[in-house]
Structure formats: structure tokens, C-alpha cells
Length: 161
Image: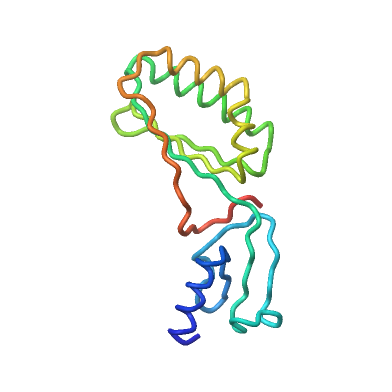
């Protein structure tokens, strides 16, 4: 693919909310796997050497970080383990939930990816999540949760198989 064609393809992707899949130039760089319509090179009028995938589902990704007291950190870890247990039992394909503990042993970072808003609502409606949330706010946090919406730029794995 020539440089100008590649630039035009990237611009087209950004303007039209399309995902580019090209085994020669883009394979593995932009990964998303919600329900899609595929346009292969035989029916792609704009860029015949590029396969386009039209994304129909909007992913929601969140990063939350906060600091508990040293005394509450093990309780928080147990509450988070309860959420993970319930999510594993649920086996919802549109929820990817992870929590990380920073080196100070009391600062937590949650990184959650949801296929859509409905999947996020499922997480927050879990009994284990409600218990975690209630106990966290009652614990006397050293720093309150900061919630940030993040946007996926690139990934090595696929989301929402």
C-alpha cells in the first residue's frame, strides 16, 4: 500500500468510525471484536486493498483509582475477589474486569472494559459490587476514587469474543 493510500485509509477510518483490517500493514494494531459487518476488498470501492470492518457496538472503558487505609486494603482485596468470583460465574462476554494494587499496598486501580452501557449496569447491579462499594465508602479512604473514561487506541488482544 502506498503512503498516500494508507493516510487516506486512516483518515477515512477516523471520519466514518471504521476499523481497518489489512493483513499486510495493519494486522493486530487495531483490535476490536464487537458484532460487525465486514466489507472485503472485492466490495470496497474506496480502498480495494483494504478490508473494512464497520463497528456497530461502542465499547466503554473506565479506569478508577483510589487509596484506602492500610488496615482496609486486605478487606478491599477480598471484596474485589468477590466481584471477580461473581463475574466468572456470570460468564458475561461483554465485561472485562481487572483490578491492580500499586506498590504502596493500599492504592487500587480498576481497569474495566464493557461492550456497552448495559454490560456496565450488570456489573454495578451485582450483590458483590454493592457490598464492595458500600464498604469502600464507609472505610475512611485516604483518597477518593477518580473515575476516568478511556479510549482504546490499540491492543494486542481481542475484546468481546
